[in-house]
Length: 122
Image 1 (cartoon, rainbow, N blue to C red):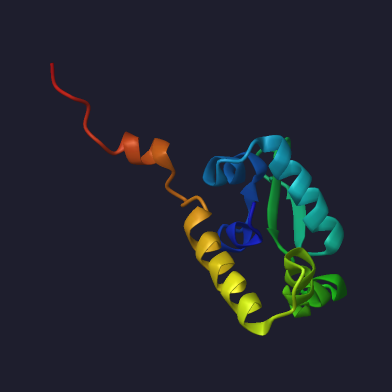
Image 2: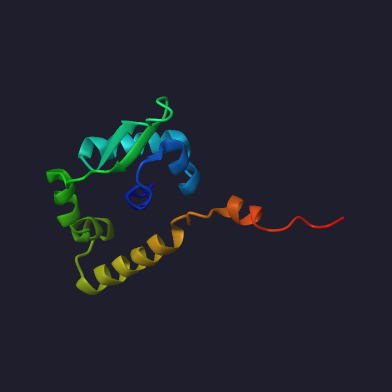
């Protein structure tokens, strides 16, 4: 799950996030709990249906979130690659950027795309 989904869809329910991301609701709930603990998101009961919990991005950036955003991935990549070669790190980082752009589920998943197509006539 990406925190950017929550930023793009404030006051959204866990089930809606699961539907958009294609992740199981249990994984979304766990991720929300971790993000809430880190101070990235806030939750509140849905005023219309108090059984639902709405999630939104935190109004202020917590100290922990600021630390995470400031940290780069270079140390982790160096450790994983067993090398601190700057050119190699740039190449792997660029490849990860490409993967991140292409592997993130779109908000219109396969189900909604299929729903927009006409059924074959008999």
